[in-house]
Length: 227
Image (cartoon, rainbow, N blue to C red; front, side):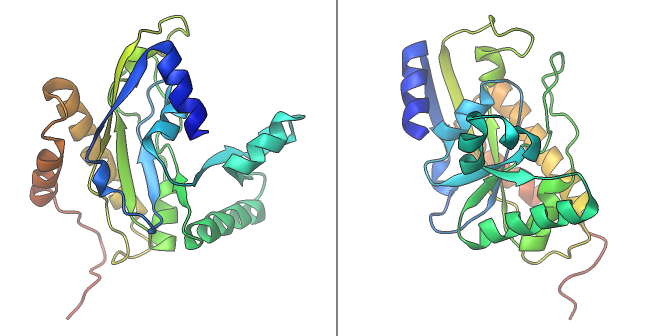
C-alpha cells in the first residue's frame, strides 16, 4: 500500500513534506492519532508511516464481497454489537500492539465540512493506550483539507501535504481511569500545534511542541508515583 500511495500521489501532483519523522522509534509499537480533515487522509497514512500498521475498521464492511477479504488484512475489526463483542475487539487490539504492530486511530472519528478545527475526540484511542501502556503519537496532516476539501471530491488541488510528527504522550505511568484527562490534553496539544503550523509553518514545530508540553503538564485525578 505504501508503494501504491507514493505512485498515486506522484501522478496527481501531491508531494509530501515530513517534519520530525525521527520521533518514530523503530521496534516500539504505539497508537498513532492523526487529525482527520479530508478524504485524502486515508491515503496520507501510507505516506506517513513506513512500518507495518493496522487501523480500526467496522466489522460490517468485512462482509462486503471481495473487498471484505482485502479489508480484513489491513484493519483491526471492531464489533460494537454487544458488550462482549466490544471486549473481544479491545483484546484483539491489545494483542496487535503486544506483537509490535502500530495501530492508527482517528480520534475525531470523522471530519467537519465547515470547521477546520479538530472535532471533539472519542475515548477509544485513549482507553486503549492506557490499558496497553503504549504511547500515543500525534500526527498532523496540515494541508490535506487544502488539497481535497471535504465539501466536494472535485475540489482537489495539487501541491504540498505537510506531515508533522509530534513528541509522544507517554501512558505507562498513568492510571487506567484517566482517559478523560488524557483525551482533553491530547486535544489541546494537537489543536494548538495544528493552528500553529497552519499559521507559522512547520519548521519549528518540534521546539514549539516541546515548549507547549513543558508549560502544560498533564494532570490526572490520581497520583501515580506516591512516595
